[in-house]
Image 1 (cartoon, rainbow, N blue to C red):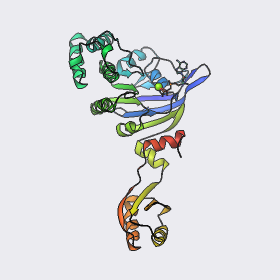
Image 2: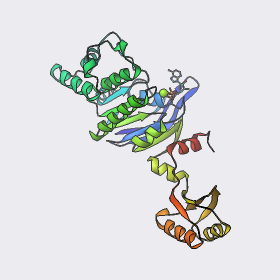
Image 3: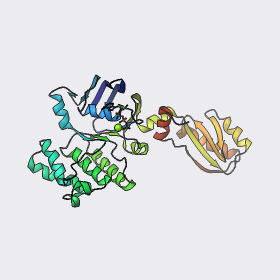
Image 4: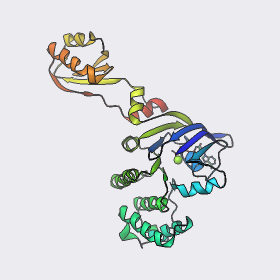
Length: 307
Ligand SMILES: Nc1ncnc2c1ncn2[C@@H]1O[C@H](COP(=O)(O)OP(=O)(O)OP(=O)(O)O)[C@@H](O)[C@H]1O
Ligand SMILES: [Mg+2]
């Protein structure tokens, strides 16, 4: 659905995006994560035909960016929530949305229905006639998301949709994105919120000017960490330790207070033997579970700043 080929953008001497080659599938929620200045916004702006690449290219469906008449098709196919919403503050949500719908050539009879649907879905219908300038940040963000969707685009680009929102407003936006995903829309999500990316995204790309890694959150976690089983014991004795160390699959056996941490190749197979061995050595198991890694762990490992 979205394909980039060596996409590159420089601003003078600054290389914002370098040789980015990516494939985003139809219906996928694709997370784009990376530090400040990593080129996320620049990438999205190129994909929406707002700025031209310096080198390389990209395709949205069969349309190539920055090539006429493809760019016109692309503008109809994509909706963009930019980094700052930029709404008309003196106009009501309804008028804001109606204005953009007209700009996109949505026929009058469709406009009303579409705007009503969107405002109702986002719980903003009651406020449809109040000036947007009187709204809180979260409310403005909802209107900006509705604006990105007013022409019913196949692909939605969201540049940090929940940044600066309180937990409840952020959850409303996230739930709304889940609904959109169920409709089969392709969503490209720039975010710094790694827990959010992990929850929402089918796959994520980690970028830092260049592409650092891409995969599902689970794949990335498995790629960069061995799977570790943690066993909470009442107490750890030397005989338990040596029995576990003697197991052929147990690697890097270590303790953390009365917790035993063991890297195992295949926990689904190995854990029962591990548990039996501990019990046979007189250990009293309180809990046994997999040590959870998060996307944040992957990020810190690959981008730096972590152990
Ligand atoms: N219009 C511009 N003119 C000059 N430099 C720019 C311009 N837009 C972006 N840059 C530079 O390109 C680099 C990438 O910026 P970009 O906004 O794409 O990063 P980002 O990943 O979206 O960061 P953030 O997480 O802070 O939003 C930065 O070094 C930035 O200063
Ligand atoms: Mg940005």
